[in-house]
Length: 318
Ligand code: NAI
Image 1 (cartoon, rainbow, N blue to C red):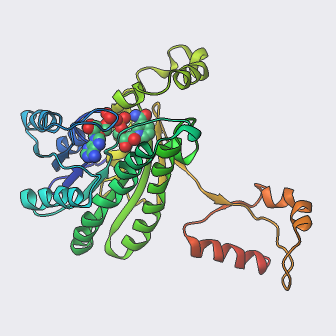
Image 2 (cartoon, rainbow, N blue to C red):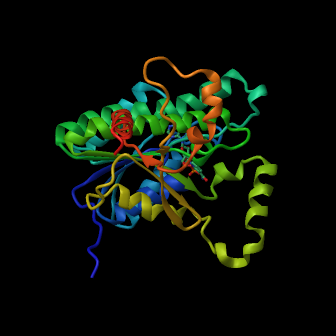
Image 3 (cartoon, helix red, strand yellow):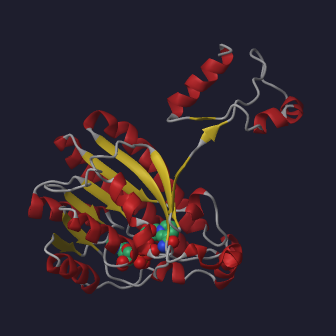
């Protein structure tokens, strides 16, 4: 019999939990015993306006099912907002065991037509948003000697997507934040991972029509093989597992897309070892381009130091 994954006596913060993916994370965590801070600014998909109703509705839903939850309406886009979100958890429940940094909004534009305010809005809500909540949550987790942080990144940033330069760069930046959180958290029992989710939500419904048509074309011949897997609930099991005590993954990037759950790897190829005493010429690099680009011998590296170790092993001929 499999052991149930429980969150009794655990306190979870889910930012952007008033709808879409975040709502499903908050509900599932609460159903498994966690006390949950349901944070949501309550604005539109593109980050305009605010209201208390989105967070309140999810809190009511959790309480009606017998779970524990409090609402938070602060914006992740400011440092003060991040502090206030964590304070809400501490005031209500006295600790923070899980942080899912999920809040976000979407504004698309081609790179040559990208307005400053779009760039600022995307960096503020996604990249700074991740920092603003992680920093105070990490402090608390370090003190407790336990924590799980999951940052919602995106395939648009880690792999690329048209018209999403600002969104994608901000999302890819969160993987950089996760890399450091996981290293600095290791000795304090704090584990951090990044998520690349896919689901139909009000945000994905706002995607450029051409992009939606292109993804429709990729899956056109699959008939009913997709089932209901675009529903946000299909992302939730991976997210909840990553945030549990049972999961010892840290420093990982995970993709939950259309009912397929997979780890995403960043690997460094064996590469070409150039001359030792003087730098290679540009022509040398051109001549060895196939070795520079080769996939053979590629290894996953877990840190900057890990890459040095890889080079050292290669120089030793191991
Ligand atoms: P959504 O728009 O339904 O959910 C985002 C939530 O964040 C909203 O409820 C919104 O009110 C809240 N929010 C926005 N700005 C906020 C702020 N400053 N402070 C606090 N809350 C704020 O969208 P969805 O699809 O559920 O997205 C959740 C996360 O997953 C986002 O970070 C998104 O970028 C990411 N993501 C979603 C994908 C998808 O296919 N739906 C793909 C890749 C990433």
